[in-house]
Length: 457
Image (cartoon, rainbow, N blue to C red; front, top):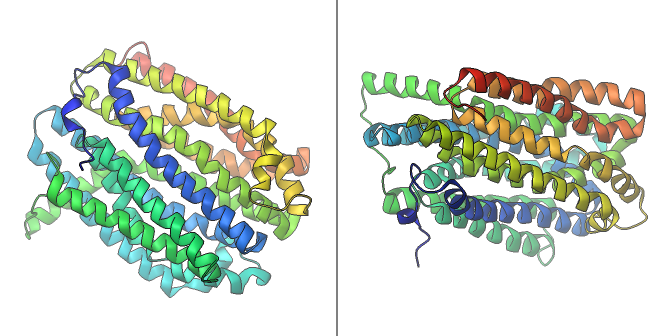
C-alpha cells in the first residue's frame, strides 16, 4: 500500500481550488488526528487522574510548544527556500537545504533535551508550578523530555514530505503516531495505572513512530527532496551556517507563532493562578486542550497554501499567488465562524467531556469558553495573513504580527483586561489581542499589495 499522490500535483499549473484540496484534505486529516490525540489525552488525564493532572500537563505545555516552534522554524524555512529552488529547477540546492534543516534541528533538539534534564527545578518555578503540584509535575516532566528530538524531526519532515508531493504520506505520518499515542495513553493510564508518567511515555513512543516514518520516507521514498550527502569541510560548514541563517530568517515568524501559544499558556497559567488559584489553572487547561482544535484547522489551511504560494512566488506567477491567498482566507473565516458557534452553544457539553459537572473547575471553564471563543474568527484571519507573509519571504511583516498577537498585545491584555472586566477579562484577553492584531494585519496586507509582486490580494 502506498501513501503517495505525487503524480497528480503540479504547483504551477493545476487549478488552485483543485490543487488546494489535494493538499488541504490530507493535511487537515493528519492534523485533526493530532488534535484527537490531544483531546483524548485530556479526557484520559481528566477522568483517570483528575483536574490536578490536567493542570500539570498544561504547566509543562509551554516547553512542548517551544520545541514545536523550532520544528516549525526549520520546517517552514527549509520548505519555502526549497520550493523556490524547485520552481527554478535547482533540485540539488533544494536537497542540500532540506538535509541541513534536518541536521541542525536534530542537534538543537538534543541540546534542548540535555538542558531540560539538567535544570528541572528552576524550570518548574519558571513555569509557575505551585508547591502543591511540584511532586505530581515531576512525574510528567522527566518522562516526556525524549519527545523533544522525536517531535522536532517529525515536524520538519511533514513540511518536506508535503513539498515533495506526498501530502497523503505526510497525513499518515501524523495519523499513525496519533493512534499509537491514543491507544498507549489509555493502556498506561487505566489498566497499568501509571498516571502522568504513562501519559508522557505514550507521547514519547507515538512521536518516536513519527520519526521512524519520516526517516523511512526520506531514505526510501523521496522523489526530489531526498537527503544529500554533505561534505565534511570548512566550506561545507560555512555553507550550512549561511543556509541555516537564511532558513532561520524565513521561518522565524513560524517559531514566534508557536512561542506565542507558549506565552499564551504560560501567561494565562500565571494570571489564572493569581486570580482563581489552582482551580483556575485547571479550568484554563481545558480551554488550552480545546484551542489546538481551532488552531490546527487554521494552520492546516495556511500550511496547505504555503507550498502553492511559495512555488508560484518563485515562478513569479502573481495571479496564482493572490488567488491562493484569497481562497485560504475565505476558508479560514468560514471555519472560524462555525467553530465559534459550536463552542458558544455547546460549551457545557464540551467541558463535561473533561470534567465532572457541578465542580468548581467545571463551572469556571463552562462560563469562560464562550468568551474565549469570541476571538476565533480573528485568529483565523491572522493565521492566514501571517502564513502568506511567510510564504513570500516577507519575514519582517510575519514576525511583527506574530509578536503582536502572541507576546506584546497578549501580555498587555492579560494584565489590563482583568482590571477592567474582572474574571471575564481573563477569558477575553486572547480575543482582544487577536482583534487588534487583525486590524494591523489588514493594514500590512494593504501596504503589501501596493508594493509587492502580488497585486489585488
